[in-house]
Picture (tube, rainbow, N blue to C red):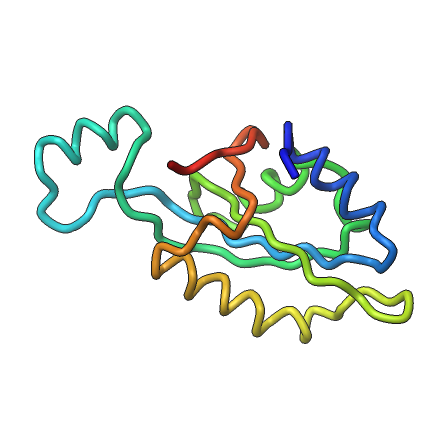
Length: 134
C-alpha cells in the first residue's frame, strides 16, 4: 500500500475490520563514530547515517487526531527526533490491543531499527510526509 501522508495511514487503520493499536518509534538521525567526509556530506543532505530510537509510544487509532498532534505530544516529551516509524497491531473480537500487549512488539521494533531492518515499517518525517528508504 502506498501512503501519501500520515492521515492516509490513520484512515486506513480506522477502516480495518478489527481495531488497531498503532506503534510508534521515534528516531534521531546521526553519524556513525569517526564518519568519513562522504558520510558527513550525505548526512547534511539528509541521506545515510545512523538511526537511534529515542522514544516509543502506542496509541489506539481512534486516540489520534492528526500527525501534528502526535508530533506536538512527542515534542513535549523533550526528546528531539527526525523520523517516526509506525507499525500496527491488530485487535481481536472488536477490541484493540492494550498498551501492555504493545510493549513487546514495540521492543521488537526498536531492535529491528537498531539492526537496520526498517523496510517493514511505515516512516514519516517531522511534517508527516512519508519517507522511502533505498
